[in-house]
Image 1 (cartoon, one colour):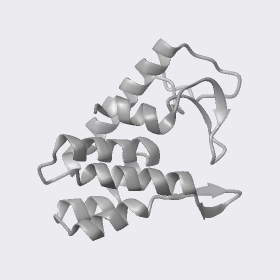
Image 2 (tube, one colour; image 1 turned 90 degrees about the vertical axis):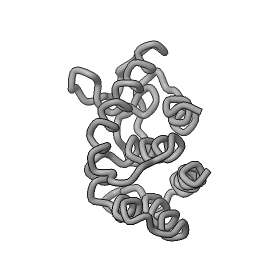
Image 3 (tube, helix red, strand yellow; image 1 turned 180 degrees about the vertical axis):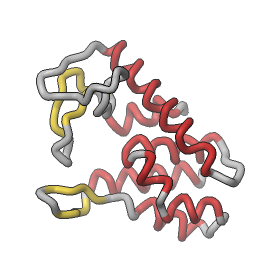
Image 4 (tube, one colour; image 1 turned 60 degrees about the vertical axis):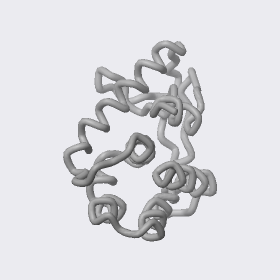
Length: 147
């Protein structure tokens, strides 16, 4: 499975901007910023081809931003799992994460899975709450990481 196929399955396709579960205007396969740097706003629409282009640009940018901080060899499935997480939580979140530290230490499977699972919350009205969809996604990413 390719990274774009994995993220497409996780994110789903929306051609009209909507508010995600955290209230952030989002479009396509989870895009929040267009290629020209503009933030997505409600009322924006795109085509499937534009959504695909945005996804591929987002994937490339995120991998370029994080590949230097991963200090251990990774399999293709591990890269897909990591990029999927970073696509969802952002580069900054990953670079400072317990997950990155545990990956770089070649920590135990249980500890790395637990670090994936930490990223299952969204902020709603200033409060961090667990999101069942993110809990399930983090499990799928961890399962892929160890497959």
